[in-house]
Length: 122
Image 1 (cartoon, rainbow, N blue to C red):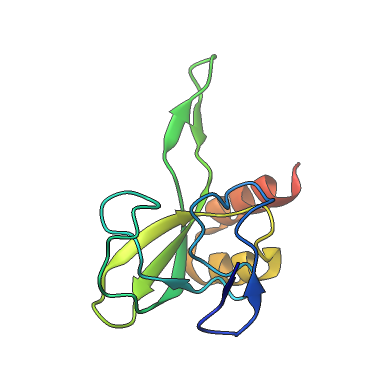
Image 2 (image 1 turned 45 degrees about the horizontal axis):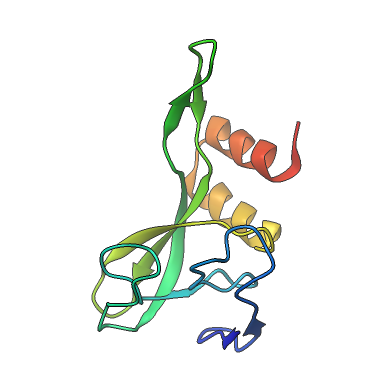
């Protein structure tokens, strides 16, 4: 467990999908600049607050019928100190309201519909 540096709420680091190397808050989606080379390495010296600035998708995939499918939802964070950006996969307990708020600000209609599909199903 850790305390969010942005909203001050206690954050669980286990028990939900996507929390193995968690460094973002499920309530406000802010993160801390901890990892340098790979998720969970905690080698970054910066340790500054990272603001959620966008939503993207992990990657395009091709299904067994050859149709392109979009990958899982990722939160784009930008470091308030050094300006570095990183993508973090969402976790099972992340606020859908906060994810949708950022998605509406940064995605087109087709991408927004994909976010809604992944969050809530068809």
